[in-house]
Every structure is written in structure tokens, then in C-alpha cells.
Image 1 (cartoon, rainbow, N blue to C red):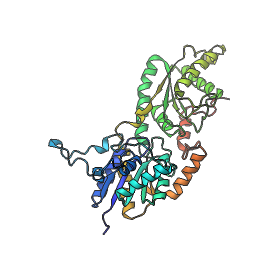
Image 2 (cartoon, rainbow, N blue to C red):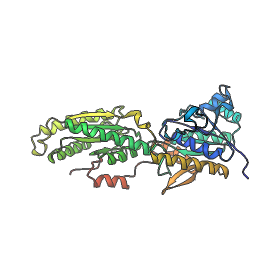
Image 3 (cartoon, one colour):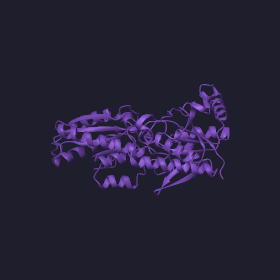
Length: 388
């Protein structure tokens, strides 16, 4: 007989679809065991507010959603369909500041938890790992990020929905591009990793996909090759094109641009005009190349979670509760080969820390991987040499 446990759950870092679904899964699985579950508002900042007396512990207890809805809607359970996080998803606790770390640790002790489930990306898990070591916490990590760049897991919560969101945007933009014979550049999230741009670009039928792993800088050759691709499409009778660009790609000077999509759109239009002026027959159709840029922004973090993200949330939540029941702590729940497994955080976090120190992505797109090869074979220009 497993004695009842008192566990906490928090969502840290940026929000993404599926956070509420994983909260729901943890609460359902834990309460069926007779455990108490406490939701920590706004990540580790919630512990600071507990220590300062801004919350009462009883106010934070989570119960199965839907049972307390009045009237004819009683029993309606919609939590797994909602985006964002009912707990908030800020991250304000830096253990490198002893004063902040002390308040967080005191708040954790005040709540009297047996274990904590932390849902976060690579930066959040790095920070919480240090706090957990200081406070000797029992904890389980659940990876979430639309960038899908947490190592040792094939999928992170929120990625699948974000791919769907970007794919739909590319689909919608295709028709306005075709109607006005435009080249539309779609800027998507991905400061260090191009998983989102690559997957959505393939699914959305993009003609060009540029990601940091293959095109860290928009050099003259890349711009020239994009214009060559546009000329090829026009030679085939198609007057429009879609370019998907990850925000982490840098400008011609190797600097980051907040609106790199607008920058690239202008470069394409200018260079097409220059090629047209050479008088070469292969560039004769580059007259009146009209470009536009669309930055999708935080809409990529929104939307109803996809069915796969809801399944992933349910599986991750159940696995986290099972690990706590077995008192198998300091683990990260991971998805591999269609199944849920766990990976010791003592193997995960040192890798994260080293990558952060070296300012490189913890889990970048594999330049020789299946998705890159698929894009190449479909005729998508992805930054490698298109012409001799």
C-alpha cells in the first residue's frame, strides 16, 4: 500500500498548447491514488509568494476539473482542450541570486511537498535542477517547448500543435501569394533550432526553408540561390513562392534581426531586380517580383492542443505520477519510439548546461537527418548549394 502523497506541479517558461492537458492528467492520476495535488502559480515565483504569505496552501489545491461546474454543465471537462496554462507560466526564480533562492526554498518547505512535477523547456529545467539540488527536492521533469529542442526526447509537449498552426498559416498565405503573384516570407519561431520551420515548411508545401542549422547567416550565395529558385518556378509557369524562415537565422552581417522575415523579403526583391538587369535569359522572368513578409509571432504558442499533444500530455502526466509512486525521482519523462520512458536528470541537465555555456542548441536539427533529406528530395531549397 503506497502512503498518500502531497505533490506539487508548476509550468515554467513560455506557454504552449498542452500544458493544461498535462495538469489535468496529473491531477486525475494522482487523486485516484488518494493524493493531494497543489498547483504552483507562475512557476517558481509561486513559492516566493507562499513564503511571503500571499497564498494559503489550501487555495492552491487542485481537484478533478468539471465536478464543481454548476447547473446543466456540471461534470463538463474542458481542461485538456484549453491552451495556455491555468497556473501561469512565468519564470522568476534564478538560483544564482541567494536571496531569491532562499525565498523559493522556504516556500517549498512551507507547502510540505513529497515531490514536485515541473513542466518546462531546457532553460527552466536547468534552473529548477539547481534549486532542487539546494533544497533536496524529489522532482520529475516534463519537457515542453514548441521548438522541440529538449535533448533525449523525440517530442516535447506543444510542438505538434505549433506545427499544425504554422502549417495552416502557410496554407492560408499560399492563396494570397498565388492571387497576387507574390513571394511571401513566413517568419516562425526558432531562435536556435529549426524543427518547427522544417516540419511546418514540409507540411505546408514551402518552396524554401531556412533554419539556423543549415543557414546560420543569409550570405550572398543563399540570397542568390533563393532568387534562382524563384526564377525556376516562374519558368515552370508558377508566379508565386513561399519561403519559411526560422527567426534564428542572421542577416548578411551575421547579426540577429527582430524582423528577419522583412529583411529577407527586401533582399530577395532587390537581388531579383539585379539579376533581371543582367540581361541573361534565365532571369528574364524575374520582372516585377513582389515580396511580402509575415511574422506569425505568439499565435504559434496558442490554439487548441492537437490530439497528439493531448495524448502526449496524458502519457507524460501518468508516467510522472507513476515515477513518484515508485519514488524514482530526479527523472525526465521522454518520448521515444512511440512510447514514454524516463531519463535521469543527472544525464540531461549537464548536457543542457554545457550547451547554454557554449551558446549552442541542446538538440538541433540533424543536417543529415530524415526531415532534411525529405525536404531536399521534394525539391525544397534549404540553404545547401542549389546551383554550381
